[in-house]
Image (cartoon, rainbow, N blue to C red; front, side, top):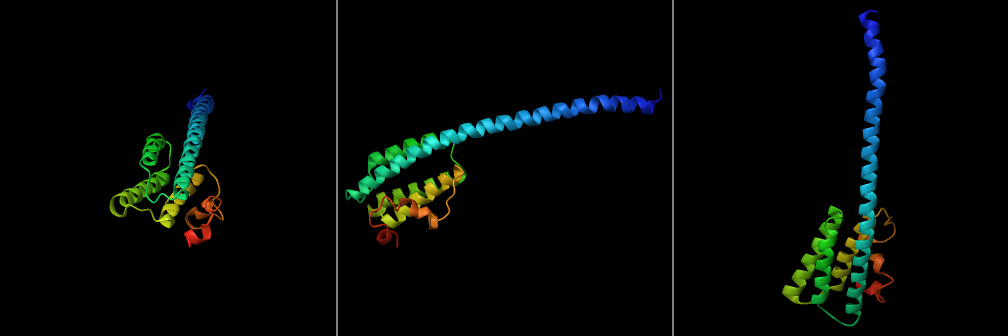
Length: 160
């Protein structure tokens, strides 16, 4: 047996073994990543549903004539922020931060909320959340404002 046939025999044996091992590790990596993403998506759905419930509370406050953010509601939003910070996408985190900055400025400077700005900031968050969950935002309007159409009796007046 010469060296060439020995090398061919060794390669014939080792290459499938190496290929199988590499294939196993790639499959294991993909499965772990899929498992993690499934859990993250499940967690996101729960947290985002909690946020939707908070938004409904905000609307009930604005419908009863409150002009400034409720401190109890801000506390609930802070609690939500603590939980979702690990699961939300950077886009959702940034929109949520923008919303909080708006609430801070409304609380400190004017002590009133501009409903149009308020709804737009909330709808941007909700639109980003929908994107996070893989849902379509087609036909929801600029910044997703049509998300609130069912909740606001005078939607066309407020949003224009």
